[in-house]
Image (cartoon, rainbow, N blue to C red; front, side, top):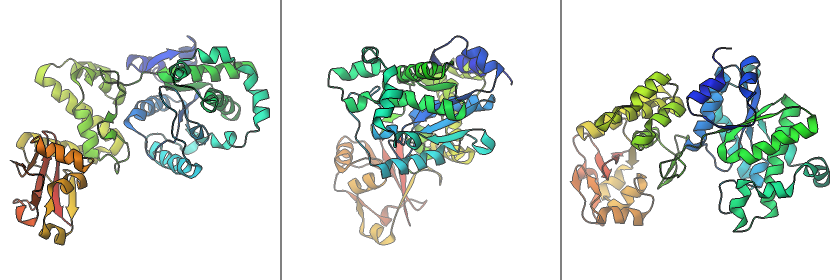
Length: 409
């Protein structure tokens, strides 16, 4: 093994808490099987998951074996950690579909061939549990007094914590025990909001199997106001290019706060730390160069080098020359629709520059919409083929940074 991965994770700012000081020594002397859980609550992973995926990639590069645990069972309950309300209950079919999509996405980052990593689904052991046997085997080891002091439950106590959710910690702890028995998994990793659940699992293995199990929590990536990074006014930033285009993904990282640039370069790229520190130290307008590097590097890992280059070229064309090239976000209409003319509100919603017609109306009324460089004043204005510029398109712009070219199919 090369450099101890614990030191790599520590230097890059991943590690929030660990259960044992000996974990560094363990990671230096043997190949460790570890797991990270992903509850299948949507049909794509998000930018929020990306930090944990990066940690997995560092671990795998150092010779350790990841288990990506899909929460086909736990998603039926829903984790109360960091939540002020109970999660919506999803159907088993929806959860299975989401888990399948997660598997496809994770395979882009983690090598599962030749037993280098394992993809497991806790539905395999949770959905057919015998409740009385589960309480006898697992429930006896959990102190309710201790559970109620856990941060994930304390936050919910004021609004009312259901017994349904109270089971979540037992189930996550049981996951760790099952993975330990099946695959020799010794380490659970997860976001720092998972600390209580991770401790519960390590403690359960110690009691049941009479051996050590370890936990390591990862820094949560937040904006300076404490909101989890990867959220926008329009919702989550997705890793699925159909849900968040590579261009919009690039733009998200290109536009993050100055104070977060060095942290994101450290956690979300593989750039050497000397380069991360050099870029992070840039000031004033120079910090924009660091943001471009960040946006390019993260988009390259998630969507590939070709898409990263396209996004970068499109962004530069828009903001340097005020134009847009063929790689820019594009929406196409049928020829007959363009011949009739399309109203500006429909165009803004169809192109995904605005989420709703009322959002579009507000943007026009506030003077934030332009077509081919001219401000649109009327909410009933229509545009069509007659408005195409010399590049056979309409350049639709919202605010200073969002745009889309309208073309004919």
